[in-house]
Each structure stands twice: as C-alpha cells, then as structure tokens.
Length: 80
Image (cartoon, rainbow, N blue to C red; front, top):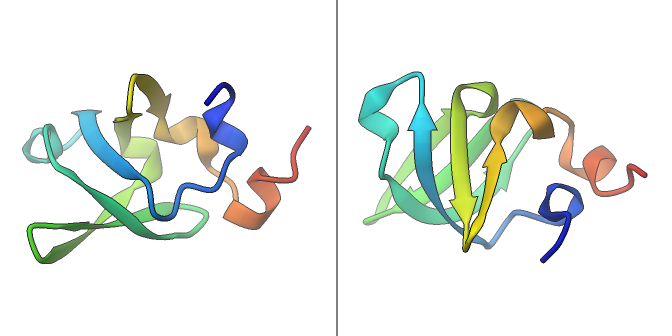
C-alpha cells in the first residue's frame, strides 16, 4: 500500500481525520466517485461530497492530505 496517492481510490474505505469543516471529522465510508476536486463517499446509506483540499483522510493506516491528490483520477494514477 506504499504510495497510495497514485492508486485508484474508488471502492476504498476511508475515515476523515481532519477537515476545515469540523463536522466532517470522523466520517467513515466508501469512496464511490472521485473528480479533480471532490470525493463522493457513501456512509450509512447517505452520499456525501467532500472537497479534497479541505480534508485529510485515512485509508487503513495511511494518512492522505486531500490537497496532495488534487488531480483528475486518471491523471493521478499515471503520474511518476
């Protein structure tokens, strides 16, 4: 799972560990869609859209700052 920033995120379980919007901290769910600026997460039967550069999240024991993955998913996975 090293270098998770280059991997496909859709389908992965995440937990928001920090956010400019404090109400988002602690939200857990599965990423169901990703765009350049947004992550869409399904949690408890609801869908939430989160702005990447405003959140930090964990996938397992790996922490990712959203602003570090501010690329289209298809471009990010191809980056060197």
